[in-house]
Length: 423
Image: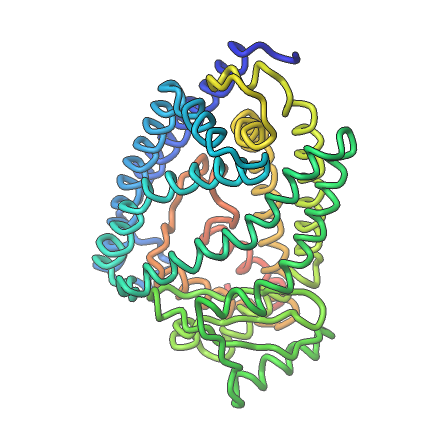
């Protein structure tokens, strides 16, 4: 036994509570850091009322997030120390099924409980908060249709992959973690093709960008940087939300650029080309490959650690479960791993913020128009009511992108150097 049940209980409990307190502190600091004076950089896209509204949007979401996080923590601790895991394990074992079916039912019930508990909060966020601030376009029917599709996909894809993991750990002893790692690599690579081709169209309509000045400008830019691109799609993001975005997905011949219809309506051709240049910059700078490799390595480490802890009695006793099992061990290890996961996420976010600066620089240099990227970012932030002045500690904990004012500052310096933006 590596650690006693008391050490494991203390470690996980301390991680949960300290993490909750740190997040609460960051959210408090973020609210206190709000500046009622509109930054001069945004005077051309914000008026006083809209800027005040953006700050109110942040306050409402922060308060709601605090309530949600507090409720989730209380429910988890109550279930844990009330012996919920042990009761559930006894129940699923009593069904008399084989270990893999038993494991799928055990984990499935936990996920179902989490879904039921979170559903009222999701409904309130969508139909009260997002509705109040003019973002929600989702109907109740569409909301529940999306929910049902998500559940079915989780059952099919997640159930298959989880069954494979349980089978490997039960059948192949010391080599199980390596087989799980290999399977996860194949799974990740397959998902890169399956998601954009078959899964995403289940939720949104993807229409090829029609011929015209925008498509011609995008293809002309792609040729200028030797970027092979045949798929440019417009996604009906307005079906669910008034917010805007663009993203890059897929690999090889399957790679595609996707623009929200809401984004196209609010940006000029030059601005949209700069937004897409930023997305292409992630590919050309190998950020996507780097993140994929990091994810694969991280999964290998996780599976190796699982193989070390999954049969430790102290881990199960910490959760008041008497019988050892692979399926429960996966859940318990996930909670034990949370301190390391938090540390890794901070490192990955630092790297991600660096990548965003690089993609901005790539877009600015290759288009020769940092000014249009600045105006595009400003309009996107204003349209989405983004927080313009986040607290540095909150950024450190939660931001995968640099704060918008810092991105604009970097682009303006670059613009001065390139003589593409007046001082």
